[in-house]
Length: 410
Image (cartoon, rainbow, N blue to C red; front, side, top):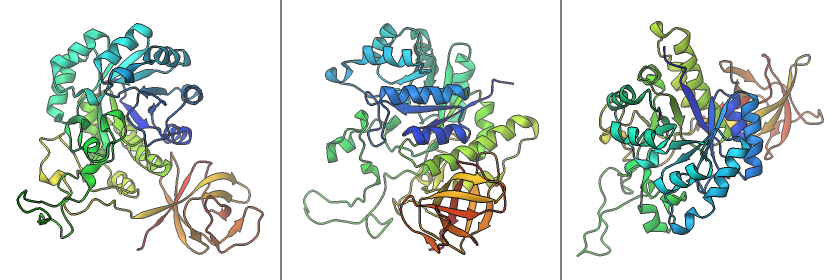
């Protein structure tokens, strides 16, 4: 039996990091305020990274920092001191895509583990061996590889280096995420962390000698979303990924909500743990996917894992998300004697409605809100103010950090 596979989750801020760890991630990755590829997430100052490291290490988990921009000359300034600071703080690894960045980090902080980003487009055994010989601890493989190819890489490099792959989240229409379309259309550079996602835009066809005449591409009357990929979801195939010998499975989504992280991480945590409880008799439980579908998502694909992605991996008709459930609130406190839970509101909720409640280690349960008060104990009919504190009675015990959701009937 291989060492138990790592479940690696994104953290866009400190609250999201805590949610990721509490809901079952073995490790988290985050961006500092420099050298990372996610400007849309809040990112972490060095002081915040230090707090994050403490929270993670107290729970015997790990923390990785992304330094995966593709830098120009001026962009690499200061990486030496920054890498030293990260090492002194106790960061477990940094994630790098550029050889120059790799070299400078190795010189500045020789004992800091370096992981090679998916942005480096590693697709073969020899490139993995190259990075192992340079001293890299792990390679995050390009998303364009099949499971068969990944197994071949693992079998030929397992004594040299760890292999990580993505298993869930948004897919990029460009090879390993290296895209110039955003830069061209909006001035926002995807390779510097500021992608505007133009692959999700609506497009028409125009012939150069007929300016102003827009010809629809017939997938949709409003245009085509021909570059719009489905989201990767491998929850049905966790056993295949584990048996391939992969060291770490990575969830995409540093700009996603706490509710998204809790829901997705929880499903993968249950699936992975159930596999290790009885590998020979492991059977995929459809409950895992049903739960994942309760967050905002696009249609799902298995990407390149079982062969080249084809037309079934794209969404030609729309670029919108599927939203079957509303995130209602988070449990802040619970009194076991009175069975009253204190909730911080996220979406409007009314007395008399039925909600679902879930936590890290439990299956969800339904709860009708028969009792509802404000934070001072006054009866109310609705919680309709942003982050309003309110109280409800629950039939089952809950804990701080549990989430409430409601089926969207619209």
